[in-house]
Amino acid sequence: MKLRAQSLGWTSGRKTVVDDVSLEIGSGETFGIVGPNGSGKSTLLRLLTGLLPRASGQVYLDDSPLTQLSRRAIAQRVAFVEQMADTTEALRVRDAVELGRTPWLSALAPFGPEDRRIVNDALVATDLVHLTDRTWSTLSGGERQRAHIARAVAQQPGLLILDEPTNHLDIHHQLSLLRLVSRLSVTVVMALHDLNQALRCDRLGIMEQGRLVACGSPAQVLTPQRIAAIFRVHVTPLHDPLDNTTLFRFHAFEDTPRHPFSVR
Image (cartoon, rainbow, N blue to C red; front, side, top):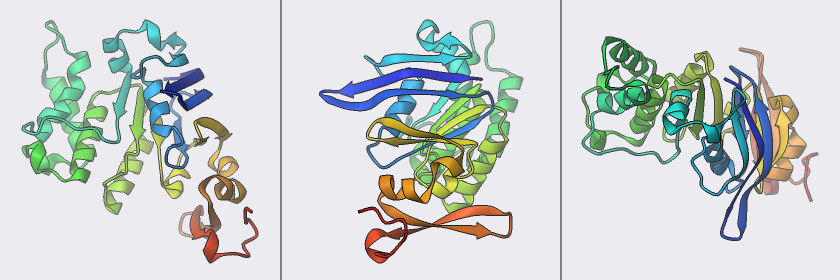
């Protein structure tokens, strides 16, 4: 599914949170959004799903304006996992994941064997089979996050939007989640704090003070100079001979006063 945003903006009181953001994301692409805390990443994701009132600009899904689609039609196309999502405390994990099938159900198409298969596949993909009958109140933060992602996978969207999806996850499940996302046959947009994880994306957009200040491949966007200017840290690119990838090591300004990428 293609996604296009045109001149998106949103204000809270007198503060502009997202300011005139336009971008295009191709079908099947994994697009990462990075930026410092408060740069507008989460708000931009909510604008892309049509969840914020009084927004300016327009969002298009495969050239269809989001504003012309019903909430059911949007839910059949877009799954959104928020950073602080929650659900009913008494719900079981399986029940929570089954909610992902809701947009596809009706009186003429009730929950059936195919829906059950899709839910089971989502539980397997997110390593939750052993927690199927656990109630929500007994889960850790990381387990709840994985359940929300399983619900989104069960929804079978064309566009998957994730806000800080690796938050609360241990290293094993962070890597498993990123591997899962890379294998899904969907368009993915996700906000990330970890710049090393962002290097795995097809393309990145970087937010600063509500504006999209750069967009391109990870190598084009995450230059040492730009990281120093926006994130206020120095970075040393390192090469991993195991898989021929680049990794970043970060240094505080005060720890490396003679670093060649110093910002005064």
